[in-house]
Image (tube, rainbow, N blue to C red):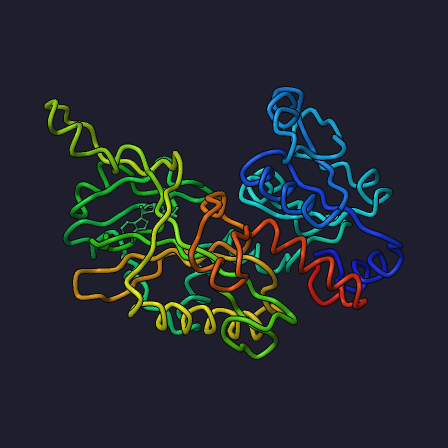
Length: 345
Ligand code: AMP
């Protein structure tokens, strides 16, 4: 892992800073947010994506660094431009293990991204935080619907639902390293938060405050269109590939629990790996008895925040306010107060 002290030295040498990310996932929102605060933006981009990122005047980066693919990030060029890298889902996926060693300041804590990439570590983190989680099953314990997740699978691609050990072994085999979870039936809610080192809204944590920014529900194919399939007599197995997101509000009486869950996650992350800074998401399913099960934490901005309007960020900031704007504001404040080191790694 690249040493935190070295990141601190880099940040100490910055006389100004720019915001850089890979042109994918939530990059339009991140660039738009930075522009709102007059911060210079750099898009790391492939030729195939450039036209799209040039086509939105209020969300296109000020400058492109062109790459053939995202497996090797242009570190020297980014350092020269005093860049802070904003991690999002595609960056975590494409940059992979590089995240550990990359000699660049990353907004937030790269330690949290390592927890996100390892399901066992993530479940440990969730349980220590007091979250109720689906049961993790061994193949022979499957007795009813269970969801099978393969290593590294992102966005739900390739997941299976099985109902008994025989079905598991016939579909998955003996060797595969999977995580099997009991399938929770309920309403899915993906809740977006922002942990701030010096914000004054939200709930107090042991090292700052955590704000609720919004809630989305993912549109997953073909799980979310099953009724249409049934109506035309199609018999296609369920799948969970994310296609997009829609806005959600929850009954207000559930919100205190969600704020306590976020506080637990923030406080535990401080103990486990030095804290979480900036955006994160707790992915949940609420059963008909109003039990909230958490099945994943995304330790960075999630694509559901691309929805611009959320009552929760409106109540926190008094205006329509995106997570992209929140990131830019936090970095700008920290830079002004010479506290960047507290929120990058
Ligand atoms: P994940 O990759 O963990 O975010 O899961 C992808 C999708 O699979 C989720 O958005 C849910 O729709 C579904 N899913 C994941 N875990 C569970 C579970 N334990 N019970 C029911 N559905 C789940």
